[in-house]
Amino acid sequence: MERKIGLTDAKIAGIKPPQTGQFEIPDQIVPGLRLRVGASGCKTYIFRKRIGPKAHNVTLGRHSQSFGLAAARRKARDFIADIEQGRSIAKAKEKARVRAKGVGTISQLFETYLVNEVVGKKRSAREIERVFRKYIIPHMGDRIADTVTRGDVTRFIEKMAFERGRETLCQARSIFQQLSSFYTWAMPKLDALPAHPCRDAWRPKAPKSRDRVLSDFEVGLLWEAAEAEGYPYGTVIQLLLLTAQRRGEVLDADWSEFDLENKVWTIPSGRAKNGIASIVPLSEISLNIINRMHQLYKEKSSFNVSVSTRVFPAEGNPSNSTGGLPKGWRRIYARVIEKAEGPVPHFTPHDIRRTVATGLQRLGVPLTVSEAVLNHQSGAAKSGVAGVYHRHHYTDEKREALRMWSEELDRILKLQTQTQMRNQAWMKTVSEKIG
Image (cartoon, rainbow, N blue to C red; front, side, top):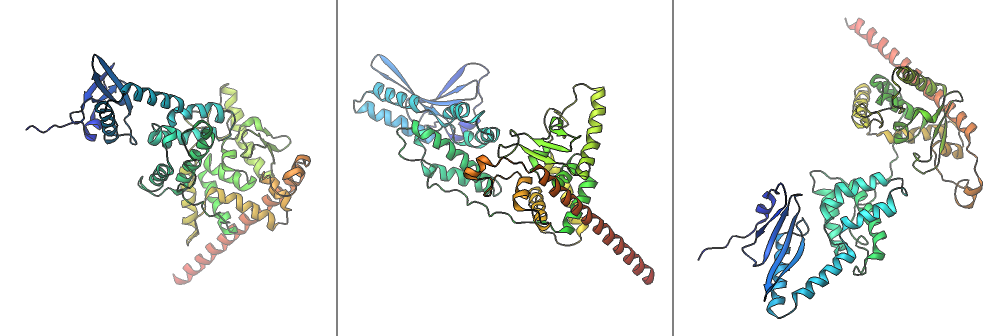
C-alpha cells in the first residue's frame, strides 16, 4: 500500500507565493484540509467539505509560529468529527466567525490601540510601535487576542530573553511592559479572556539601579578622548559633561532652541523626557563650543537655504539627528581605556549625568537646584500640591551651578595636564639616567 505524504512544515516553509492571485495545496493526511497561498505570501489553512449538494469552506487560521500544520490538522479533524456525528458544520463555522470578528488578532487590535491610545498621546509612541512591529507582531500577531495565556506570554518573553543568540534581559523586560500595557487597554474588549495574560507571567527582574560615578581622573580622560574624536560624537560627549542633560536631548537639539545672546538653551516639552520644558543656562565653555558649531551652520546657510536646522544632523538624512553615537562612543571609550593604562570599571554615557550631579553636590549646590539642572520633577518643592504652585525655574541658580561645575571641570583638566607633564618629565629623566 502506497504511503501518503502530506504537507510538512519544511514544504510549507519552502513554498513560494505566486506573482498574482492564489493557489491551494491539499493535505494528503487529513481529507479536506488545504493550504491557500496568496501573492502577498500569506499562507492560510482552510477546510473544504461537501455535505450533500453544498460545499462548505471554513477558514481555520493563518499559518504562523503559534498556529502551524499540527494545529490546523487538529482543527480540521474536529470538523470531520462534527460531520460524522451529525453536527452542523455551518453553525460551527458561524460561531467561529462571530467570535473572531468580535475579538480579532493581536495584530488587528494593535492598529486600533496605536491610533486611539498611542499616537499623539504618548511621548514614547515611536518606541511602542517599533517594539510591536519588530518583536511582538512577528511572533504573536496572528494569535486571537483573547486566547493568549500567561504561559504563552512567559514562553514568548523567555524566547526574547534567551533564545536569540545572546542574553537580552533588559530588552525582554521592555517588550513585556509594552505587551502588558496593550493588554491593560484591551481587557475591557475581551469578554472571553478570564484574566490579564501578563499578570503572573514570567519577566526578567528589574535591573539594579546604577551607581557608577566617574573619578576626576576618568573625567579628564573622557574629555580628552572626546576632544580627539571631534564633531559630532566627541562634541556630544563634551556637552553632556558640561550641561548634565540627557543624551537624546543633546543629540536631537535644534538651532531654534538656542538663544546665544542670552546664553540659554531651552529644551521644549515635546523633547524633554518628563514632558516639561527645561531651561539650560550655558557656561562660557559650553557657549564657546556651541558658537563654533553655530558659525559653521551660518556659513552653510548662506550658501544653502535648505541646510538642516539640527545641531547634529544625520549625514544621509539631514532632517534627522545623527544616530551613530554608539559607534562613536566605542571609539571614545577605547581611547579612555588606552590612556588609563590600568583597569577602568565599565561606564556608559548615562553615567556622565550622574557624575555631574554628584559633582554639583560636592561643590555645595543645593539638592533642589541640582535636581532643577537635571530637569527632575522630584522632591517636596515639585511633588503633590506644592508642585502646582512652585513654578520657579531656578534659572539664575542653575546658571551659577553650571558655572561652578565648568570651573571644576577646567580645574580637573588642568590638573590632569600638569600630572601628565610631570610624568613625562619623570620618564625622560629616568630614561636619560638609564641611557
